[in-house]
Image (tube, rainbow, N blue to C red):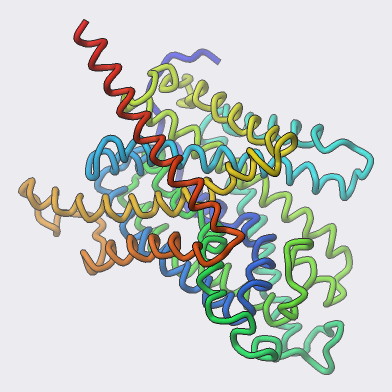
Length: 461
């Protein structure tokens, strides 16, 4: 592929954007980590934690909607932060978001390889990881249209699986299907059997970081802004349905899980989806759900590589890193940024094998918090953008999409995101994430100012 351009192409349609926003948020966080949340916060506590998380994400998306429609740009988060908070914050936000998805790539490819060993137990994990890396790289390398179409079908499988799970689960709850250990039917006894909050109410707050991680990916709508057709129409449509999608797919499936699985049995050893299907006696439940989880992992990797690639391209486009990463192929793919992001994912994968308890643990801790910091930057950018818009002589009525209840909504988005970060201090297992993140963020700011100093020195010569 001949690399000769520096522009992207608007090839995504409304159906692609809808499924990408769905696919980005429905991943391993729901299929695997939800069991951990149920075990830590109890059934009602988990439902409440996901409900709070859904509201936080929706508030952030309302802020992102106004920004993305008014200024539809790829890599939008850091561009907005650069213009409406400060260049150093814009640089830091871009590095954080790129880092989040690149680290996630390593874990996704490892998980995909491990799942394949269920069917091919004597095969080495690294072969499957390498195979899936090639598949996802090719999906992103051809064109944005090819990526969008691939992600559309990956996401469709996940969505259909969750709808099927919720329907079958509700039928089991009301006794249409027999469930092992329940006679005649489970109903909602498990939700309050050991009290509404068996681990204490603080469990709701200490699991918020896990919940926010599960919801990360919703903001991909903003990343696609520079490559979607008619952003003024498609982006608001996707954002307005965000809350309902989160309620139906996340809170709906979490409610089914918490109702059918005693909270003490939930964990991360086995997917709660598999546990539910097995308790109902559904044939081939394990294989069926492992296929769906594999699809979810590949979808997350597909979206993650796209997001990290566009963030590098955007940094180059804004002259924050070498213009080398801003070059695109004839089909509008930033190939060098794509290769760099894939290499970053490969290094994360290697660290998960070679130094899982040291280097990789630090990487995962930082990436878990990074998305929430990006959400805070989106909210603060919206607050400052609206002020800038008015000062520039424009009226609020000129905005094609307006964040409602300004400035209450953006401030609520900022403060609730901040609170969900601070609250992990009360969870000893997640507390190190905060201590790793603070020096990492400071390091990003220092790196930016070093770059500026070097640039000024070069210009003076």
